[in-house]
Image 1 (tube, rainbow, N blue to C red):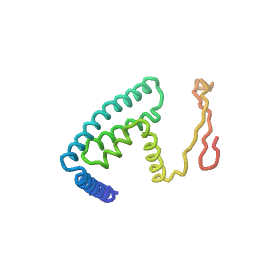
Image 2 (image 1 turned 90 degrees about the vertical axis):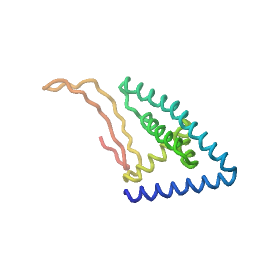
Image 3 (image 1 turned 45 degrees about the vertical axis):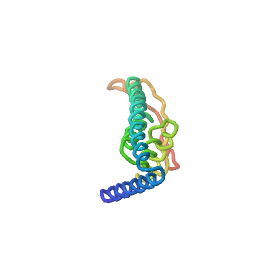
Image 4 (image 1 turned 120 degrees about the vertical axis):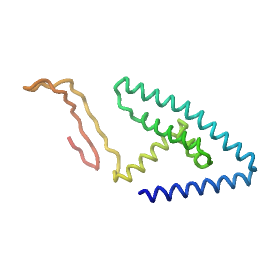
Length: 158
């Protein structure tokens, strides 16, 4: 696994250098350096703005005792996108921008989810429906009960 990460990181760095040289040959070295600096500043700005929103949403969910849901994934994508935008390189800027912008973030979240599901060997999502019953009397005291059903892999579990 570590070898694969090193190979991917090395190929990514090589691709960044190739793209940087191509852009410099196209628009000039000065403009390329200025563009790289501008994307870094844009990355800091977007990360600060979107990160504040993502953390506020997480805080609101925590105070309401609700699960984080997609807000946790959004906060992670904002962090990764911000780092990619701040680091020099135009390929990282494109991927970082996809992670930072709210309209494209669900697409990235879905792609990452599919990749993780494939890596873990999960064919499709498991759906859970439940109804909460306040208390259920038992001889040793009242117990909270959650009735529900779990569906997955084409069968129903009750």
